[in-house]
Amino acid sequence: MPATILVVEDEPAIQELIAYNLKQAGHQPLRADSAEHALELVRTALPDLVLLDWMLPGLSGIEFARRLKSDKRTREIPIIMLTARAEEQDKLVGLETGADDYITKPFSPRELNARIKAVLRRRAPEMTDDMVEIGGLRIDPASHRVSAGHDAQAVPITLGPTEFRLLHYLMTHTERVHSRVQLLDQVWGDHVFVEERTVDVHIRRLRKALEPTGHDRLIQTVRGSGYRLSATPG
Image (cartoon, rainbow, N blue to C red):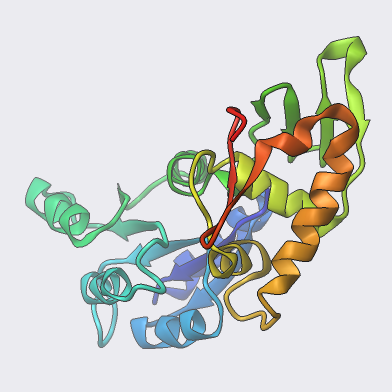
């Protein structure tokens, strides 16, 4: 699935090249030429991943990463550091600051895309196109299809776009209890202001769509906490 990726890079040519390659890979790039500009963008909406240059005018990339990791709202955003500094100690500083990966310049677009995919698969699996199957329920983000069963016996399941995103998020984060607020942030976006009961409405719609194949049982209500998707009936 396309990810929104914030590119924090002060060199226009490099920023343009990265943004172009991200678009070619199906992602949506956001651009900032300074950490201060990047902080403004992050306050407006959370990106799915940050590509962060170490050497920036004003606030450094390392300090920007520290600020993201110290804020509850932004600490889970994956960060890939981009830098010409190749010394082992520099890499350790970047990783200890909270970066998920570290790429030294120059790098190829193929390497960058591979690193992005690896970090998203590890930190934000809902942003990848990997097929997911749990208890005979299969979701394919690439073709935007949901089915129950296998091969010729597979039964297609029709979902609306919100129910699809909700199911995909739950299936890529199984066995965890998600509060309504967490689901709103992750599925609707943290700057979309809708009531918490909206989640309940879409959970009901999702369960109704899954009921004919018996997969509505995968989605469990955890009283007083929220919802969980589990292959083990609750």
